[in-house]
Image (cartoon, rainbow, N blue to C red):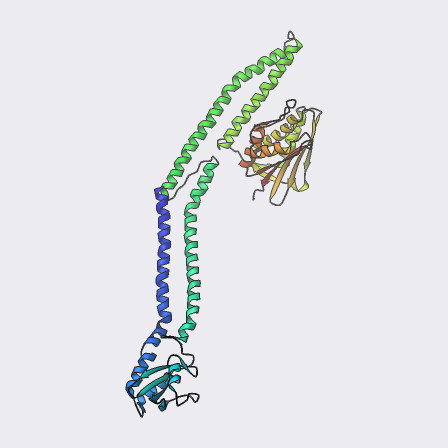
Length: 455
């Protein structure tokens, strides 16, 4: 998108500006660091200038007092050799320096050192002027000379500037990255929310405003589609209820009609039972869609969970559960006082769906346990049975594809479908998680975990 590309280009230009500014600072710093050394090496007191100045001020008897004082201030000694290589005069020459030289000696030291002193020569008509600098002042290479101070300072300078440059570049990258993340994080978060099928509303100014407008537009389109889908499901559910009620009513009448044969009554019972399943399925489908598209009103109140669960178990037992099934209620001592801000009707529905799953999946009967447990930052509701359970493959399919799944054993009415989807939707609506554990012929367990509400 053009605005996004413009934003990225602006960030890159800013980063390039930082690099150019850094190069400029490096040049300035180099000048300030080596300016003095360069001035000294090539300025008034440089070997070349002092040689010329001293040569102009010297005679066969010596040099002027002014020239001698200048050499002394700079810790430089001097001597003048005649054509035969003998020292005619000297100024502050160290004792280790000879006063007579051969042509070979002159050829050797004229390009480098004399008794470890860096020396510089100036040829005149009468002989050769030699200036000796302190041992730690210059290092001489063929055809050039360099200040030892500068040579010692150069690696420190390069290392220091490299470290500073890296720190500045890292700081620029960090600040730039932080700015980009700060500006794009709401957009990324909104896109992630959109991918979950939930509406978003972005308010961003500047270069990314066009991107925000596009995200908002996509959100509005998605919301309209979700609303239309939920309304369609709701409408179909409503339209099914009337003929379904009539079918169930006629089935009841046939079952109660004394004139009906036993075979007809059995068939009517099958029709009534399957119609009741369709009715439950339609209700679950309608509730799942409304929860998925945030169209189901959530009426949260503070509920003491032990009372809610006990009431459900009492209602289940009073409703005439088959003797083939037993249910045991366990409430941990620490969970007796757990209060949960939730929609009590939906939480009860989630527990009921799990219990009914255990009943439906185990037509020959099973023992069920309902456990309320408490932890430091969360509490859990566990519904478990010791029935037929699920194979590892079916469990993996159920976790990866939480949609309708039917057993391959046609003799058993084993189904995991909208009931579990509805439980998952209810749990996620209350910021909880659902975990399923099961093995073939070793039972089935579902654990619902919810974070504790800060009071």
